[in-house]
Length: 326
Image (cartoon, rainbow, N blue to C red; front, side):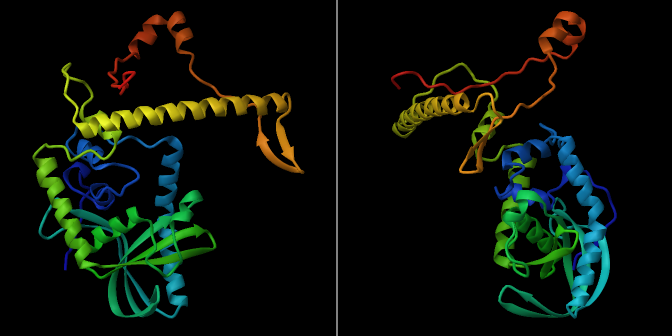
């Protein structure tokens, strides 16, 4: 069994739980290419917006609260519960570049239900993870007492089971301050073997070798090739067909945009100068004034050119354009 380490590691030196989903191509926050850029120092991880930072900070502050709530709920359900430790970091015994931090760890004795199966625990040491689930994120979670958790989190929890060698991860999802939902992720050795191979390959063949992984989307390609070499390349039949298909789709999009513009004009013309549009007593459209405050860059440059000059920067952007008749 793995043992914890007491360090505050540099995240560029290992693959953690949240990185596992990115390597597997399951993360909504980073593609494998973006993660590779971060781990190789080409790009710093984008700082969260002030609003998202508040969400993250609140989540961290709520962890002890969530942990206490789930312990109380488990005991109310008849289980014997021991809080073993919390916020311990572990390193994989085989690969020191694989690491995880476990929010909390419990020793459980009693009966739990996971999906349709009753599972007996006899002093079993389980991983625990605390999540604060708000807004639209609630829709990604299934029924309680199941393994129906968002796929990006499932990858993170399986990564933790891989490194700690344990069988179960209990997920405490705080959906309101009145109750906490209990979910489970069970160790699956076949999944873990596949994940381990991909994680090791990503680190050895891409991070250490300094070779980017295959791109997953258009942004990845732009990141890998920010500038062109000025040369031409002959298209294959398949690529030429894709160019024609894209041109046709763009024509359809343009036509739909023109239709939308016409409908928008007609609706706005009818509403003016009112704020709401109703039909049979129900609101069906809004057209209310909204105030925004933006920096007037042109005015700043005219009034204080020396200050504006200090904050100018030149960037290169590649735009994919199709030639007429392609």
